[in-house]
Image (cartoon, rainbow, N blue to C red; front, top):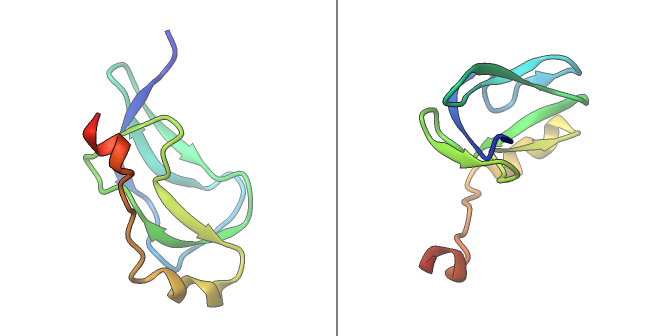
Length: 89
């Protein structure tokens, strides 16, 4: 069986923090294990979309990253819009 959902255990960084490859960004929990979600690139955390304790599907966005620290502020008031079709499901 493949992992289909996970729960955000806790975020290890905050909005505005610089992340480097190999940094553990968050702890992700499944019904069988807890694991670190590691960065693959250099970036800054611009917005956290999934709160600790929330269950998310694999592939769903959980945060927004930007390459330039000056772009972080542009996402301060960003909210995720729910697709009407998905909300009805």
